[in-house]
Image 1 (cartoon, rainbow, N blue to C red):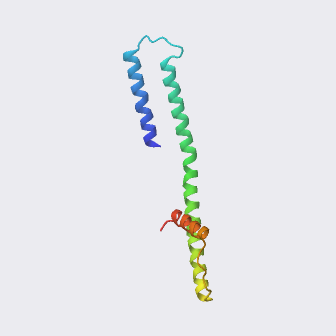
Image 2: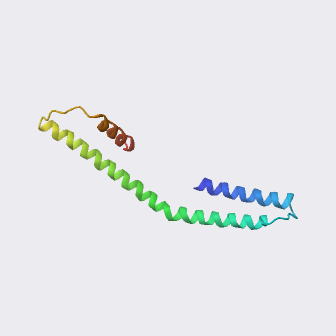
Length: 109
């Protein structure tokens, strides 16, 4: 977000410079200065959205981490219970193997 913000600033200043130096008397349906002001408004809205959604992203990550930890503990308990009752394990089906790989890909080590 900070890089995008910086990039927007750079674009804004470059556009202002180009318009002032190359097209001081530009005639057109829309004034370039007005367009630059609109770009500033868009940038401001972007910053507002970033501020509003940053806490949501943090909570989402915490929730995902908690789910992964809980799932990992559950899988470990199931394996231990199977060992305790000496349950004969059948090989995983292709669908179960795929699901296991997908879960492991999203879980931290």
